[in-house]
Image (cartoon, rainbow over all chains, first blue to last red; front, side, top):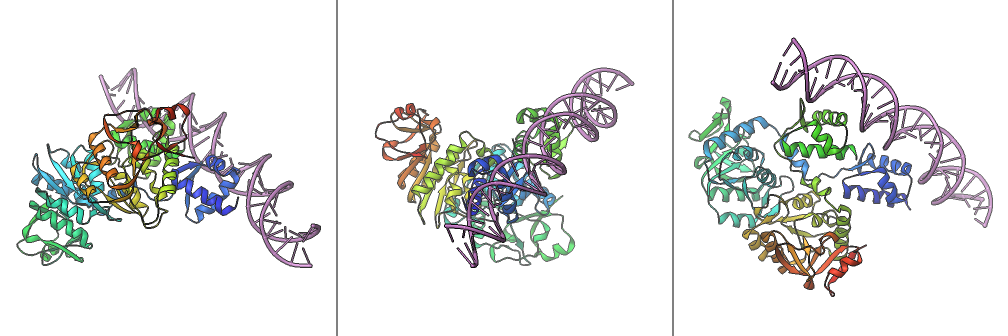
Length: 251
Length: 251
DNA sequence: CTTGTTTTTGCATAAAAGTGAATGATTTTG
DNA sequence: CAAAATCATTCACTTTTATGCAAAAACAAG
């Protein structure tokens, strides 16, 4: 057997099993463990696998990494504060809510779990998993999946939204500019947000201070019709915003 | 058991139970408490859990890592064989496919990643995450979420399916009885499967030997119109099946 | 086809890492 | 404060890994 094809076998097996022992690979390729170790050393140098004591691990990123990623995002504490404020002040029992994909709205889930009888609709896969795990009655929009944010987008999702009405929509944003325009880089995500706003009696925009003054490509709304929930702002941040914005600062 | 494997078990257990004792983890992994303590120290350094006197606490409320769970399900190797067989024999470049929620169909994803130009539609959240991670063009059905299986179900999903056509549907089952009826416990999941079968030029049922002879509440189809892909069967299993079933045994 | 060179392989052995039990220190609980 | 439980540390033991070396295989040139 050629070295290359053996290493290809090893790579596939490791990726398939995520984690395996040296002796498994030895049996798989009918070679000695020494050979496997030498292969693994070379393959690790090339970044094809990760070596661990006793075997090898796949380097391919899988689903579970994302939830971990969320935990380490910037301003996590602020986001939790904003999320709690939003739930405590604007969510009532038996509400139907739209919860946007994105990290700040995601942080609402544990607090929502304490409100009786609510139903949420979301386009965020991680938000869905967390909500289901917390026993919340959850609907997920269907459609294409954005690879980086794992948000559901596309025409299917928008059509589904059109047949729904919410007591409130909670939306994240990547920027609020001096005109009060709310923006996000992806027009398809913007389209979802726009529709979710249209379906709700009232919309709350969740954002931390770093987004204020930022502008992105796609505009999905303006603060003048909505309520903005944010953390305690510095004076210069407040100056950026339009005068009569409906602003709530969480704690 | 490999260290990584054990730590993953611990992580999931801690996350599921929010808080647990060292001796529980020791029993869970069949190792000494010393080993558990050493694991917990390392895991705490990585921020995976928080140590407390007597045990460990989850750092976040929930584990989303069902993909890990899937890997430890029964007959994993059989499922991988079946999944590979299915992809290698019945998937072609540029196909549009339906991939059912469920562990066997989930295993198809890594193999599908090697087929150019395919698009998959699925009602499985974990399947979606894995597929997106593998760079596959993926659509997720929208609707209610089943808490235990994380499958998308409900009228929304069925309506979405009705507007689609697939080259092939790959469906899992909880049982095939002596009449060739395919069954699953949940009528709502059955409804999705039924619709996915109706939308496809051809349907392949993926099942391992343990399901043969089993019956559940909801019937969603019959083998006589479909192709069954399974592992190498014992003679008595074959006897259970109807005579003229279109049966493929993976290796 | 033969010969000499290089690469790869498998085995032996020493080093390293992981494990489990014992012991005494520390923390919790009543 | 005392008893019970838990923890950190150490040590003997097992498993896994790295290294050196000789045999085997692959390769190249005459």
